[in-house]
Length: 265
Image (cartoon, rainbow, N blue to C red; front, side):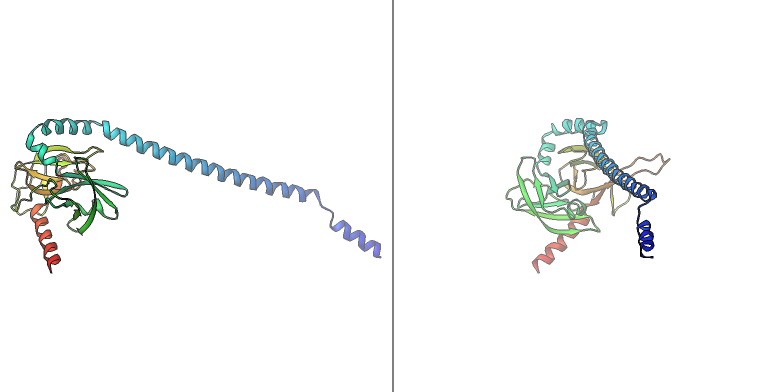
């Protein structure tokens, strides 16, 4: 009886051919899964590489696009005028973490105006003058609703642009100086499009592109009448053209006055 028991037990634990086949199938499935993961990693890596190539290509496209070339051509012509060249000295590039925009000095002791969205969550901030001087900028005040920010650099006798206290006028000739499409110190001209005053938003005919945010809108005398913050896009099928949008200077002057009042308390 004992021998019969052993015989049955031994037969019970003898591996069957199917067992080996099952193990081979599992191994093959695991290899397929690993291969799939490798393929996924390769695909993701290739996708990232393509995105980087497209990003670089887009930068070069912007540099050499027809819009960019036309902006540069117009800017070079306007910059031959002495008063335009003087205006440009006060317009700065604001470089922050993850992006850049335009700003301009409004006082000889280093107060800088720009948009809130240009500097929001992008500290530390560097202010670069066309002379090549670079300053670290401190945020004094930033108002999201108005989309305006006041910065301060540690500078003396910096070139600056005066703020006009009265409203811009309909069809008034203006200039915009900024850093659009990977360019810097670009000047273009246009006019005020608003038909009724007072203006909640300043509509301008100037061509506005990414990088123009924070650019000064200047009268022919070089006084700031607004700060560019966006452009409008015509609706599909509309015959209307898009136009630039700026914050009227009277709203900014009021905001700065409130900041000074709070600072002096």
